[in-house]
Length: 506
Image 1 (cartoon, one colour):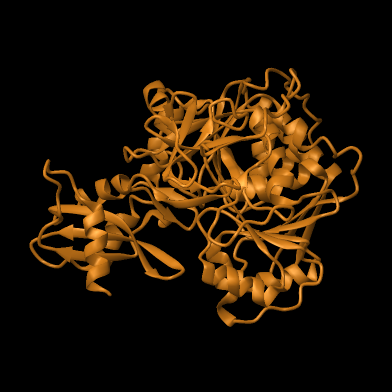
Image 2 (spheres, rainbow, N blue to C red; image 1 turned 120 degrees about the horizontal axis):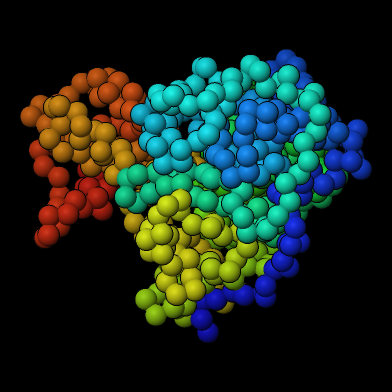
């Protein structure tokens, strides 16, 4: 029996399709219902479906008045505000391609992205690093005025055409531009039952920021698609206060990364949350210690999902099909997922690379202007995730780790090569290696191991790195060594570094 889960093809989207129109398809019928509630420390701001759609389509008109045409790219440099999803959906509504980016990126990182995508417009919050070149710019403080412009018409077309671009760390050390089609949102229907247990009556509280793709999809787009209410904490909201908001705002589903669950559980207590049906977790594997404590204190299960920027989530547990502890769940209905070895799907129980079929409607179009890199991710009909796993006879999939040296920083994938390139540019660093180290049963960090004539000042190293790297890519510790382990052919051996650290620290 092979490690292959295939429940048959998922229904195709309409031949004339627009992602934004699909997401806001319930807006007319639910005009006065809360679509979004922004939870501040001392205030609450609500957006009903009718107001939200008007703001999106008014902003779309404003973008067209900037001279944009379908296919143009818009670099989004916005903070944790509601304008982020509004601009994102407004672009897609009229066929313009948004490129959402993390507000933590430095100017050097933004300049690298700008060179790849050649945007026609930057939507810019002046408090966030901007590209250094001469590019037409729409300032964030002018966005609210666009909400009241006449609504733009939806740009309808082939569901396979480009809708948006997101960036992910590449194994080469250079961030890769992942191109997604309009149909990507259609494929997310498989998550509604396969992960969320989501319906129109739900109130989903997502702990992430507006400008994180996990929040954008799970916390906003998917609830709006079914007519549910999205609850999002405002900028600056402390994670340890979230459980109280779950209670006060009658959240039925709570979604967060494992690190947020850990912060909430630090007090070892939770308030009663009578409306809460279950929790959701993604971004990295949730440690069993965190899961058990949450379920003990909250009285509700937490369901995990596995996915990546190139295909969102496609393996998950759900209220209807819980997964055994330690397992990531099963392939969602409509997906074709396998554990692949050199010759294709391996026998059940054997380790291999987690892979999704190339016909999956949620799979990326490819990496922008990188056909060779795109082709390299496929083995025949299978898109290789780069993660290893094994499949049980009942179809449950257990994640076993990366097949390469990619690291996970709070839900973001980070290439060690990208961080090493920055540290190797330091004048006193002879050579650097960057690895992910597990420092607790439920926590890991990015660590930099460097060779230098003397031990270097850690604060100075941090200042050097912080001017060139987003905060989530930054090493949390620096370790001095006289040499770095190498393989017989001279290649850096990061596995040996990790093993050495574990031996030294018991």
